Image (cartoon, rainbow, N blue to C red):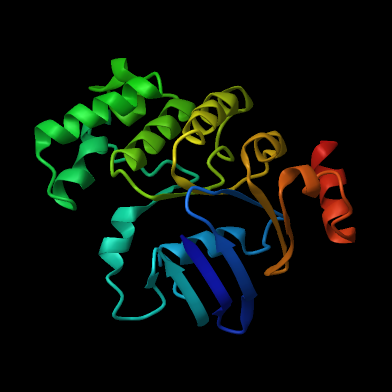
Length: 242
C-alpha cells in the first residue's frame, strides 16, 4: 500500500529525514515511536504530501506522490489524516464536519454522506452530538469526531499524528478505544504515538525513529522483548517508567 524508498527531507541545512526505507502492506497497522524531534510527524506528513520530500520516492497504492504530476487530490481521498489538534471546522456542526469533504471532494449526495456520517457517529458513540458544534465537545469527543470524519471518506489509509497528545489523561483512553475498534477494519493505519500499550496491542509493526532515521522495525512481540539496540532500550526505559 505504501512504500518509501531512500526518502530524504531537508529544511534548509537541517536534514530531517535521512534515507528512510519503509514498506507498509495493505491493511497493516504500523505504529511509529521515538523521541521528540526524530522526524516522525514529518514522515507521515510526507505520505499525503503535506510535506514534499527532497529526494527519494513515496508510492501510495501504486502512485508515486513525489512526482510533481501525481494526482495528489485523488491520493488524498484515499489517504486521510487525523491531527494532534483535531482541526474541526468550528462554525460547522459535527455532522457538517463529517459530510463536507464527501460532498465537495467526492461528489457524494448529501443524503448519502449524512447517512454514512451518522453510522460512524453511532460507531464512536457520539450520534447524539450530530448537531452540536465542536466548542460544545470535550477534547476527547472532538478527536473521536475527527476520526469519524476521516472514516466518512471511506479511505484506504488513515494517518494519525499523535492523536492523543493534546488530550487530558482521562480522555486519552476513549480515543484509543475508538482506534482499537478501528484496527479491526481493513484499513491501513500509520500511527505516531507515545502510547506503548496501544503499540503492543494493535500494531503489526513497531517502527522506532531517532535523529531522522529508522533505527528499528519489528512486530511488537519482538520489538518489546528482544534487544533492538541501545537507542531503543534507553527510550523504552524512560517512557515505560514515567
